[in-house]
Image (cartoon, rainbow, N blue to C red; front, side, top):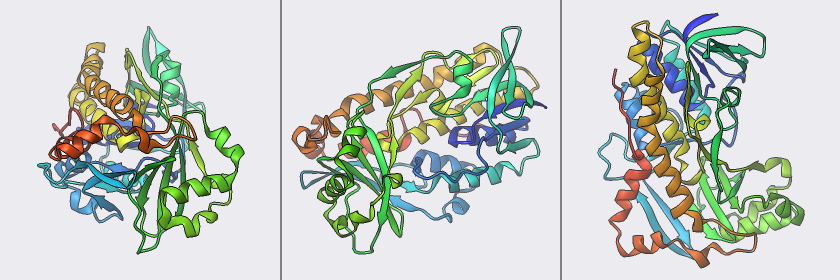
Length: 394
């Protein structure tokens, strides 16, 4: 099989890159190893910057008809005191809020729009397992079915455990993550009053899914085995103490199989590219869940990639390594700034051990937010738009 661009990975970065390149007339094949996008407990925050991109493409009304909930501000509860950490209401965008939407709906929407372009192909149940290298240049991939997909450019968008990255010998530099996360769900009732973020013995993030709560319980890095040894009743009590409104149903969390353990990794590649290959999204920089900004950065990477490399490919040219350098140069500083924020300023927001009470070491930034409420608008811009928002160029 021959194409101009082979995108490995059908997540937010891969689908957006494939869509925008096909929109410019570039022949694109996106490889997705699963049969569909139905994976639970994946990031599903759609930030104002991403909503603005969809509006620029002319699809926002249709997109917002998909089931979602809106969050116009982020409020953190520490020791019974609410602090508005980020306010999106003053952003000069069409949708000044975060939309919580299942990621499979987002990806299905993008895939449906991309399919309208004749130069776009999405191959499901197709995993890239090896790179084709010729004359020191990546010239395509080999799939798990033994099919060769040859391309002028391979985009690695296959996530934080990227096969493409590993096969290319691109080694990430890792930072020490502050936490691991346990994802699970509990039934929701209309009268529930559960803060979005609640600190205490651990930290609990609550996402309103309509008829259920999607919950993320933050624990110290590498503490899962200790927590599991204490038993499910201990976890149930921890959740109930942070969200008393859920105490009457925490016992429904009665099987560890219902608890999904996410080992948080924070890393980034020193070099995102090899001749013929570019890594973007989590394949280039795995983010902490803090702020839910990983999807935002992945989508911004995809837009920058399409803006900078799309015209080269559309002319029928093969992107030079200098072209790939331009993409990394444009996106790297935003990545570094965001990771520094996640690992530095917010580190004290998460527990240091299982007995730790996070209300006893509130990050200094929250004191500043209480004293200077207008800072919430600046934080709203940083979280909502990112350090370097991108726009559709063509």
